[in-house]
Length: 174
Image 1: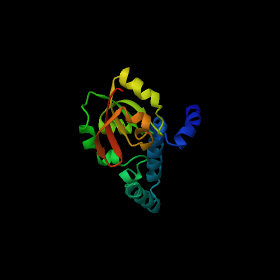
Image 2: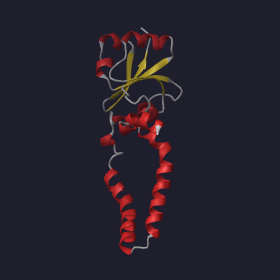
Image 3: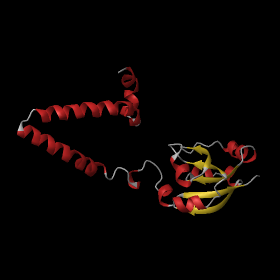
Image 4: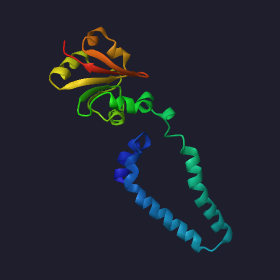
């Protein structure tokens, strides 16, 4: 109960996976409840329970079938639509700068690249030079026109691919 009360706020917002330790216990209690009701041998109650057990997964599928669609994604849809082209644009072993990924992992996962990930157009311009010269970053994926169109940044970029709202750049030293 202490764990549940401490994690309730996180469970309530977006981190529903914190509920995982409770699921085995929840299903044991539900299974015990179903068994208890079926042992009562009341036709109508058993019939209602069976209908609910059949209806629940069908209803769940109907309600949630579109929740995992690209249209309901919480960030740039072009990452999903053009993932194959974006993945092929840069060699697999190259380190990249990736803009904008609010999740810090979905964009890089979709394009199968590693590197420095930023969100909310929050990439300090002096860092770009440092990442090129000292951190081995050689490419940049960006859907941030605020960053990649900035005059200070343009001198480091050579456009190699544009897919939807995502640009892929080869990074170069001054």
